[in-house]
Amino acid sequence: MSAATRRPVVIIGAGPVGVTAALLLARRGVRSVVLERHQDIYPLPRAVAVDDEIHRILQSVGVHEEFTALARPELGLRLLDARRRVIAEFPRSLDGHHGFPQTSMFDQPELERLLRDALARRPECELWGGVEVVSVTQPTDGTAPVRVTFRRDGSDEEEHLWADAALGCDGAGSLTRDAVGAAWEDLHFQESWRVIDVRTSLPVRTWDGAEQICCPNQPATFMRISEDRYRWEFRLADDQNLEGPDGWERLRELVAPWVDLPASQSDDFEVIRQARYTFRARLADRWQRGRVFLLGDAAHLTPPFVGQGLCAGLRDAYNLTWKLARVLQQGADERLLGTYERERKPHVRHVIRVAVAVGWVMTGGQDRGAAIRRAVVGTACRIPGVTAAVSRDLSPALTANPLVRRRPRLTGRSLAGTLCPQPWVIVGGRRERLDDILGDSFAVLTAVPPTARMTGVAAALGASVIHVGDLDDDGTLAAWLAGGWADAVLLRPDRVVMDTVPAGTGDFTDAAAWAPLLHTARRPAEARPAP
Picture 1 (tube, rainbow, N blue to C red):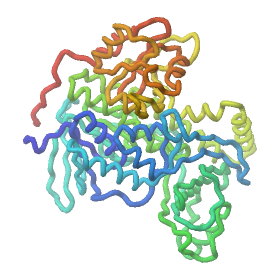
Picture 2: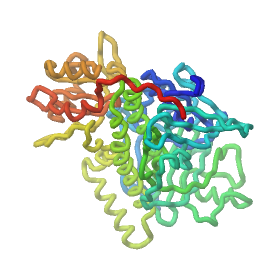
Picture 3: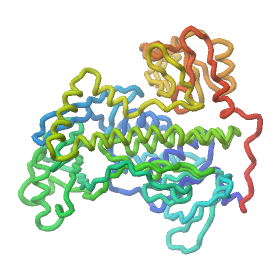
Picture 4: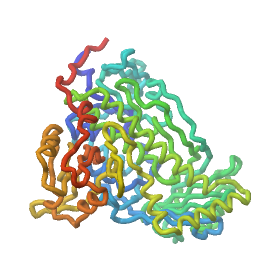
């Protein structure tokens, strides 16, 4: 094996998840090569929404300003009945917990172009297009090196790369999923829908948010993507076609509640794409084997009703990459990598269940019970705080594990496993986002003078220690700490609260739980030769 065929990390798939993973690794000095079967970006729209947590991840790879310029903030989600009367409304703030609009609409090819341009600027990353991966193998004990076998366009010759780790970001039909021996767990939702993306200059009757028609006979979703771009999703029977001589008339009927189309096709209403999709709810039963990992649609499939499909994949990348970098570069314990599935899988399962529940409200039967259920939803959502709680529930706290130290609480809400807010802060007379001050490593945020133990923990982790009173912010951080009954928190590189200093106690007390995963006396393992 030559240096030309060895890479620290091979990433299979150059969609948003794979490229973001490469950029996150590059920020930590880890080299990677991304293998993609297509030569260029898929030009048609697919994902159209991300939340403020994902916008923050885009900040971490340096493309948030460009993304903000092309994205459009969305005001929220409305559930409507068949007569388009509002059952419930879930508003979304223009200034969310993470410092960005809570929902942003965009065109996926534009996001992918931003990410690939950023990738091209990083010397740690390579992108090989026109490459079909045919197998991923590793030693039977699950150790490195992983062998990735591929063919280039127009060639039958098989070539090989060896890597310390391989990330399968290769979608629902993932070859990597077979390599880890994973099978799908069915979460009991499967429906065939037609997705229609259009560009039009015609007047469209809408508000600046998404609408979901809760009608068992003809459920639908509608959203405005940009100034002149819109998306409709309809659940259609197999014999309801939009092609052929009657296709335009059928389309006119479907979109009539929103826009008046002329009797014949018009350049004022351009159908960019029509595609039939089967919306599924599935979860891979395992996400890792040794040094091979699944991310994104390779690991989970989410119905689109709450806009979390792409979001879940980018959260995967954010969770895994800092851990992988610490193992590869600093010799951290191999068990650290096992916390990836342990943390992400319950989180994704919860999000899928929320999406399925919304789909159930939209399409849950034609009997009297279905009408009663929708009425109950409407009544519940008029209770103060319910809709805000549902919005928060799209990204619940991580479950307790060695990297999330939960403590019994007598009052308030535990901060462990939650994400730190990101306000604007003033440092040295300059106004900056908090994450730009924290950097890419661990950090201690404290509302009290740091103790010797706090600074010792920070020094051991290479973490900065920041007194929130020195940031001259609007009080967001101090209020957040006080609301969690904490004097200080230890933040992981992915901004998750790993541990807290309970108010009045003065110190972190559970370092023994997580220190063995993050610290070792050994050097990073030397690369093993390929077999």
